[in-house]
Length: 212
Image (cartoon, rainbow, N blue to C red; front, side, top):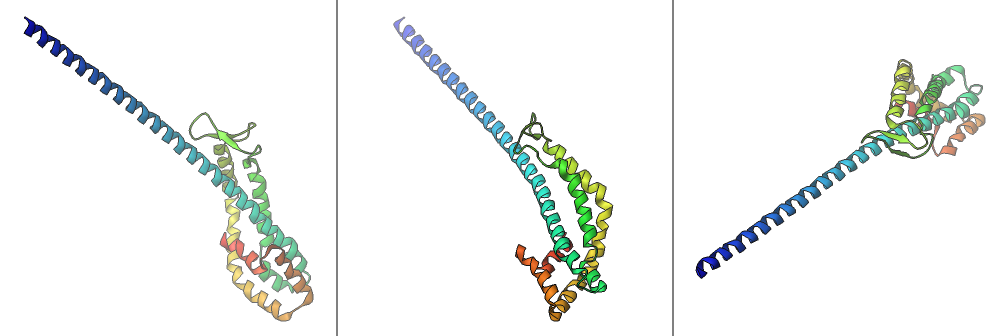
């Protein structure tokens, strides 16, 4: 009988130990699974935030690029095209500047159409879902800003054909500038020196529409 009791006690101890080990293993697996799910959720949230930030930066870059480009066009027209109209022969002036004033007008219109896409209230914040973002103070979401940009370019797309005419004419620009340098007209040289304000040259400024 004593042997039987001892054996039963031993079996009971082993069973309890096995049960504790199983419960511990289940607890560890549950904790590991919860940790993995939390890490996965955090990773997904981080990826969504990165996509939203990259999307916002792309929109801001498009707007900034257009602003800077229009500033260059306005600089060319106001500091070179208009002042040189009376200093150059009409043919020289046309070969040098072609339709740059029309390009300025086009991008001035584009600037107005893009204005609603500017974030009026500074930093953007996450929206209710993973991809939507909205500027603080009730501004447009980044998706709405992107729609404004797309619509603006789509509306004016037919007018961008004028770039083909400008680019075709640009081959004349280096020749005209070389002739102006040879002529060494003080009035023309004074006007051309305005490019130094931007650490560039008229040739470089006139090439930028070709790069577009």
